[in-house]
Length: 428
Image (cartoon, rainbow, N blue to C red; front, side):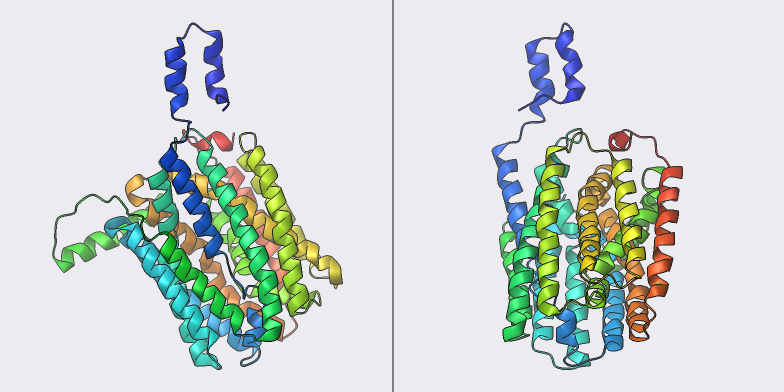
């Protein structure tokens, strides 16, 4: 294992071998860290087995209209938003492990409700339960593993692990998308059932993990409620500090767009716009996943030399250009748009994860991550019904023109607000 560059200067000075050993010890992984890293990757694989990822809109269309789909998504994501930040505060106060397990079980139940639904009501109910479950897990799982692994903050181990974890997720999405597209042609409910079971499996993988929380004194309900609200407010205040403020526009606009592509209507509407059917769309998404795995492999090897500002700029330009190009009827070339948006989301994720985990206070880490997830999801509450309506009316171009302008504004704000603290090494 190579010695970090920060310590190479000691080799030319009169420093003992024991000192160098002490300086580098924190960069070596223990057996427990290796074991937990493997568990995190397996966990990520299961939580990305979305067999219905490329066909859920076609399944909904068997029973409801696109406009109703937009309403379902908008309402469900609004409920998820309401649960998002409080769940992070609950995780920080009462145990991240508990929230993760309950969240995955709820997600699985919500998916199975939709799998056996045939009308607006069960789809909405199942989607709401699923979003509450996802909100419970969001931030809590990452904070749980980050604390348990306890990597040295000056190393790139966490970013490398998140990159590997993202690769595992991409492989899972690749396999699940192709298999799900094929299974949809056999029976449209099967992909939903398998996805629900995968989340039950994720709960099983983390079942043995325990969050090492400090003992808390028993308080009255009123006192607990006041402290809980204070925790939520504190999590939001972190994003108004110089160390995180510059990232708010990026989370809202750029990651918000990626959320609409990865989890919302936009990707499937774009695939439909480019004339890809259910199976062909599944192949496009799977191919994008495969290519993204290759990009992430390169990123993992170059983790120490990659710079945050350069990565954010390239991703933002590619995303804005992709939306503008989508205005034209580009047909099969639309696969490049899907890949650009897909890869951009996965490349940006490790950087944002490292930034937020390093800058968040330990006692509020899950809350801060939940607030970030809240901000990332917030635009889609309005975008889901809007995109559904615009697509139904044949006016999606309005969105495809407006959002790139917002991306440019977000990036300019990001460069203007430049923090100065010890964790800014990636941006320099």
